[in-house]
Length: 251
Image (cartoon, rainbow, N blue to C red):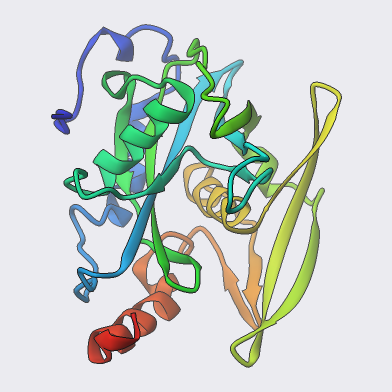
């Protein structure tokens, strides 16, 4: 069983120049372990967890990302955080995120400092995804499971606050949602981080880096450092969960 107590092992005094304690403090107001969602999540809803793995290197916070294997049935070839669907054996969101990260890239759960379990959102119509913000060693060497992951890379967290992106609008449930695309050259390969992964990276970056950047997510609704990680900014998620609670047969 994975020990979910805040880990104080030698990893956090070695290869961790960044102040991870300050990140815990910054993210505490958004940690659903401390501030639970104001609504019960239906037990039969499909749930997933992703790890948002941060590390301090060369004077800045960076985030580790993966490119999913092209052989996967869903979301093949896209940039994603390590993670996946919760199994029956997973006690909670953290356990799922740590298990999947270990399976995909060989990240030892004992080498992960969990900072916060952030508010969930729907990454697709019926899958509720919970981001687990964490700190990992800056000398971590991935052991890639090629059945699930094609490539592991990292970017500065500040990358997702730059103006170097493209944005498209898509009709969704009677309104327009905005999708952001961040294009980078990784080892000579053009890599696009977009969709759910880009949005979560933007949200986390706004808060951790105390940025004044704002981004439109849907018609007239902008996220900022004040609302990007709060449950209030997930109002559509809460409304959908309420409807599902009232109509469980639709799950």
